[in-house]
Image (cartoon, rainbow, N blue to C red; front, side, top):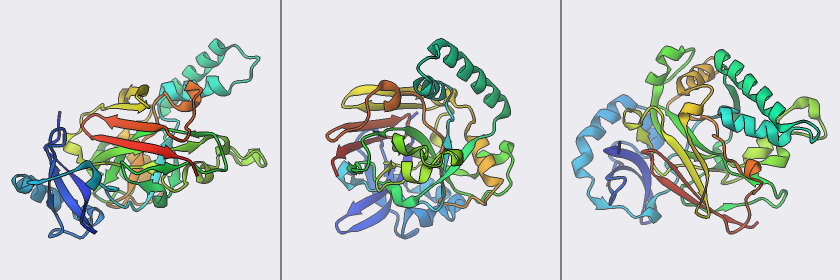
Length: 310
């Protein structure tokens, strides 16, 4: 299914404008939406009304759109992230980090059983990201010099369009405006604090360097996105991740509901739903200068990120 339209932020001369984009998989064209609001984030504040209007404007999107014009699709409010949310991914990590004297088959079986228990419980593991880590779909990412263990994690991302606070799973999807592509880069050797192991994960340092969350190119309205889109990342043309969201432990509705139990989710908030299998740590190949990551999710377009040295 190809979405008939999507939202984007387009560079038009020296200005960046909210845009309606049509013909996403062909020769995309756009219409300036500045008459509806100054930014895409502003449009999300009145999503129900804006969405109705967008349906009437598709015939007016006639200006040719070049890839170079696409910028970070919007500046999110809160950024919440779901970790360890794909069965195969978690099993891969368990095997990779297991002590060398343990049979891999035994570790794999234990991890698979643990994933089945988590599926039954359906309680997402959530943590906080920074909006300052978000960048555009075709921007370069600079690898920080403080580590050589930077990894990719292509993910389905959720954009909130209606306030959600203490919503149940049954009604959670009513609060989702759009979906987009996120690559949640991770510095693997900083995930755990070696000096304070009892504290656990340090997601602040591991995930929030500038440019560590390439986003977009489009925000595609939820009504146009299939139930189980496929997530695929290529590194220099070689497929590394290729998995459907069917492998999720906690689905989008469960993530939205769980996040809303602690804090109100507001229009323009961004939720990352976790990485499927196929990260660099599992392949034994982490990012280095000169790499090019190409990420696609069914119906959401393509993002392309070049890796550069500090």
